[in-house]
Length: 275
Image (cartoon, rainbow, N blue to C red; front, side):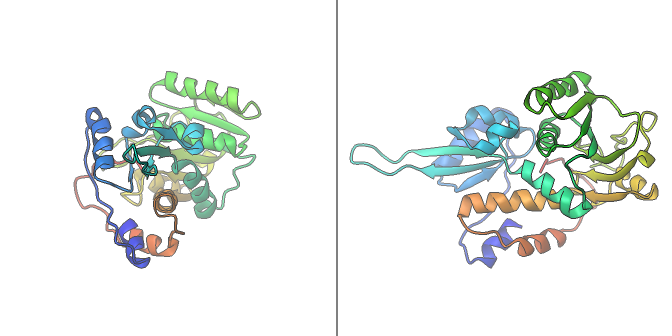
C-alpha cells in the first residue's frame, strides 16, 4: 500500500521489508539512521522494545506505550557540528483500531461493553484506546492472567470511570476483539474459550488478523449471526498515518485501500507480523 501511495503522489520513495531479530533491533535502527532512511515501521515483537531506543517519543507513543512507527529527523548543520539524526517514535495503531471499529462494524465505542482477547503489545494498546474512548465495561482475557491483571490495574488508574476486570463476562457484550495471533495458521486453536463465553453473547466480532481474511473465529461468529470484520481496516489506517508522518503529505487513502485489497491471501505458510 505504501509503494502504491508513493507512486500515486509521484514520490521517488520505496517501502521495503527486513527481518530483524530482537537482539539486533538497536543496531538495525542505527543502521537505518546511517543510511538516511526516512523512517521505519516496527512489527511484533519490536514495538515495546523500541520504546527505550528512541531519542524522542511522540505523545502517541507515550500514551499507548508502544512504538510502531519511527521518523528520522535531521537537525540543522552548524559550523562546528555535523547534523544529528534523531529517531522519533510514534504509535499509529491506537487511532487506527478505533477508526476501523467505527467504519467496519458501525460500532459506537462510548458506552460499549467489550471482551478483549490478548494482553500483548497489540492487546495493551487496544485496551488503553478503548478505555480512552469511554467504553462502559472492558473484560480482559489472556493466557497469562497476570498480564491481563496488570493492564486492568493500569486502566483503573488512568481511566477510573471505565469498569475493567480480567476474565470472561457472564452476560452479553457489544464487541469481542481478538488481539492474539491465534488464527493465522489453519491448525490454530480458537482464541476464544467457548466453555466460558458463547459467540451468541456478542453483537460483533473484530479480529486484528487480516491474513487469512476470515479466521475460524470470524467464520464461527458469522454462523452465530453477528457482525464481523478483520484487521485490514486497522492496517490501512495505521499505514496512512505513518505515510503522513514520513512524507508530510496527505495519504491517498483509496489508492492504499485498493492496493491492500489486491494482495492475495497466502496459500500455504504464514508467518505472524503484527500490524
